Image (cartoon, rainbow, N blue to C red; front, side):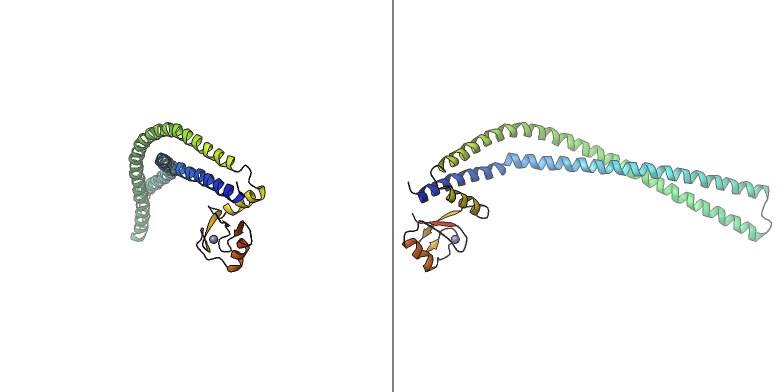
Length: 235
Ligand SMILES: [Zn+2]
């Protein structure tokens, strides 16, 4: 068999293996599994973020509690002072009242913040419960899908290995230099060998210059398409 014929047959077998590999990658069972895995990871990340929020919230609650206790102490001291040494004049009385109002305003604002934190916490609890329920449901589905898919994948890979071996078998007798060239072109071109149709490249459909065609006419078996870089054969 001629080198060009062997090369062509090898490419057919190589393409068949590539097509199968692509089919395996696009298998609906694989895609469904991937989708569920992504969902599970996303939920895990959300819960992790929530736990970080809870830690921050706990710290903030501690700070607020200390601040509230200090304001309450200050208010008690102020009230004691008013009792023990009542303000001597209106100006002094207004001053003390202003201090008390300021402390009360701070107290109110801290209490409002505490309330908001409590509300956020209960919202978060509800959301987390919801996530955990959905997570458990998808996880059960995922675990089952995974077992099924692993069996299928094993079978698919066995088929692919057979196709790869069949392609390898077809390389027997092909000039190693040609094979090397095939592999190099394949890095940027999925079908490295194309047939010549008239004076057109069967890969990219461009017309070949007369000089290249003359090389073929003069006995060359393989030429290179100047446009796409494929090996062109005449069969
Ligand atoms: Zn071409």
